[in-house]
Image (cartoon, rainbow, N blue to C red):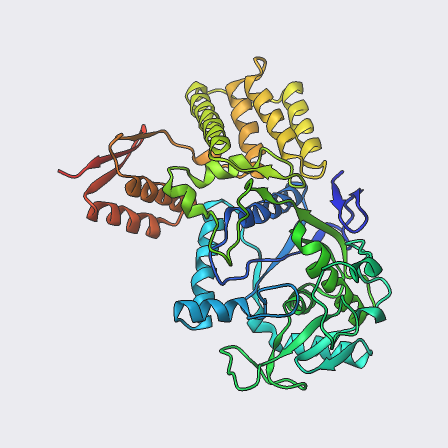
Length: 470
């Protein structure tokens, strides 16, 4: 029985899909105005684990993730510049060029992290009419009002506003959830459609019944999930920072329009703790996957590091901790390679009571709200067990890796000269990842690039060798 912690009820609940074994799942994706930092990747990793656990349990999952390429303002106060427009001005490129560039880098990073892509990437700019239609629906039902800068949702008209975040609305008037605007009727009201500033032409703006402008950030997820998954679906995911504002606003506008419950299960991943250094893409102070690769770590080292903590708990990042994860991953890879050597060609895959016990315990851990640290403990205990054959161990490890996503079936020994430049090591890792995905065209192109830089990469029966060209 799969149990998930539902933010809506603040309790761990048995997962019961709306439609049998079919699951509809939506997650908030990247705002593509800059690189995704390793904290962002932790959220996408947790959603990947959820997806893998659902599939492991036999569910058929339709998975949608949005790409925010318009409308996300620099603050949650419905004020300031659109992050996409701001980045385009800074870099002297079009918004579309910025969005396409960082979207491709995002897709590359999750590929390197062995994160499954969603069935659908839905871009906000592809669903402008659906967003306009949602505002019309809310307007018809009396939930909106007009100000000098756009159309706003009147949260006082929605009695359950703030139910998931458990907001104390009266207390907010003394606090600082959002800066109060004289034109806002309530401090929690939010923009549905923002009008373009007078005497200023934006790169991304559209005609609407209320004037030329662009959608509010919160609108896109409600409109796109409705279009692709329906009014009512199973799971919605994101980071914990989405709870008090973004997801709270999604619930309000979606349920106000449809009159139905929006989502049954809300799951949120905790932050990556960077100590005193808060990562911020806006400030430029952040660590990316490429940063880690430049320092000699592989994406699988980082993935192994993320498996060390439950998704609902903060995980403190340090290079010392990443070194420990690197060592753990390398030890695991070494055990897999040794097990392969120990398996005789005529050894049958046996079925033992102990093997079934390990599989049952593993399933229990992953179904207990995605408890990866406990599941990893089962893996290591199994590998050290003296009663299991090498064949049983390696088959269980491969089975468990359907959840962990560490690419254990593709692990190969590597012989790399110690004086090989870091740039060549990184290219070698990228080639390995391409081969794992059976993208042989990319693998060959990377091999050629390595050759142009004066090195040869050789695939031998004992693994990969790299040497300087003669």
